[in-house]
Structure formats: C-alpha cells, structure tokens
Image (cartoon, rainbow, N blue to C red; front, top):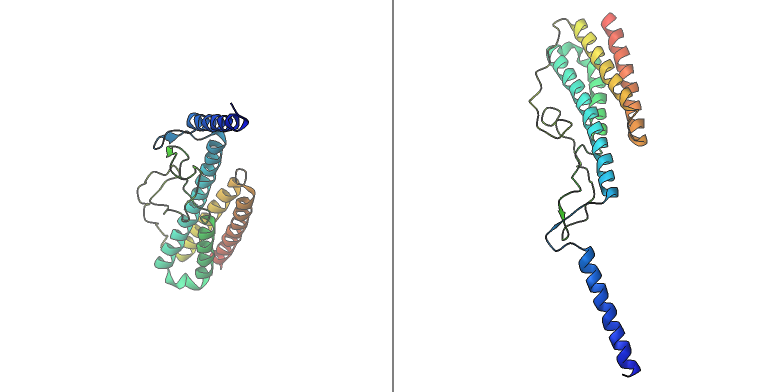
Length: 201
C-alpha cells in the first residue's frame, strides 16, 4: 500500500472514531437530556432568589394595598400619605425587577436551547401566585379603622412589619439584592416614624 493510501485510511478511521464518540455522548434527537450538577445548582440558587424576591414583592404590594385602602377611606389624609405611597410603589417595582419565577433546567431536548435557569421580567400579583408558583386565593379586602389617627397607626404598624421582614431577609439575600432590601427596610422604618408622629399630631 502506498503512503497516500495509508494516509487516507488513517483519516477515514479517525473520522469514524469521532462519529462513534459523538453518537455515544449525545442523546438521540428529540430525547430529553439530563442537566448536569452545575445546572441543577444554578437552578436551585435561582429558585431560592426568585422565592425571596416574590416574598419581598408580596410584602411591598400588601403595604401598597393598605395605603390605597386608607386613602380611599380617609381622603383628607392624601397630602400626608401620597408621598409615602409613591415611595412604597417604587419599592415594590424595584424589588421585583429581577423576576420571581424560574424556568426548570430539566426536560429539555437535545435539539432545543441550552438548559439554563432564567427569570421572568415581571413579578406576579401577590394575590395570584404563591412562593411555590401555585395559584392562591385572592387576598381579603383591607379593613381600615374609621378614625383617621387609628388608620395612621395601622399604616405605621404595617410599615414596621414590612421593614422587619426585609431586614430578616438580608441574611439569605445575595449581596446586590441585600443592599436593596436594606434601603427599603430603612425607608419603611422612616415611614413608620412619620406616620406615628402624624398620628399624635
């Protein structure tokens, strides 16, 4: 056999080996590929952060609902409450900007996109989805005290409760989100103080 013939035979053998290896390591088209350990860990982390964001957004939206109910019951409080209500609305939006749902890294096909965890751009309503992603019953209407000063005290208590919740979440939040939670918690504490002082006026 000539040198050229041997070289062609070696090239053909190498190509066949690569084809056989690829057929062993890649799943047949249309079959699900099991995600690796790194993908599963990334999904777990993403899910934990999404659940944290959902809890934080739910707290902020619940507080926003109380502001709206108080303003509806006591329109005379609008000059005092409107600026605080606007701040709470901005907090709710910021807390949910990273997404509150995660697409699973499982059950993906070899012909589909790479199985990476991703978050949705918007946060679901606090009355429609729970932290586990399951639908929940609509929240009960917010009850507001008939006396304006008592209504302010209720708002102050709600602000303190939300602030305490955000502060507790700092222990498990990723660094960037923890900074946001700390800022929102501090603002909530300041709101509670202003509402309490206003109730005494």
